[in-house]
Length: 67
Image (tube, rainbow, N blue to C red; front, side, top):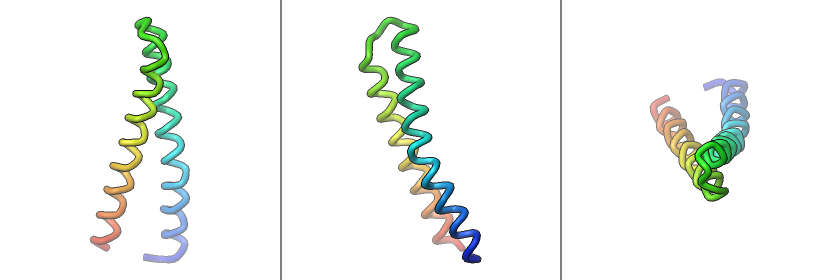
């Protein structure tokens, strides 16, 4: 793997983690307001975003081992 490709993948991971967290939080907040469930759905959405980010990190690390 070239050095520039490694940097690009690292930057992608650095952007993806907070983006998934924020997206999950905001989606959970929107669903909570839409269904009248309260703010706990925002926390749940954020947690789902974190899980998604770690799954993507795991998938990325598996791809790196294959190269």
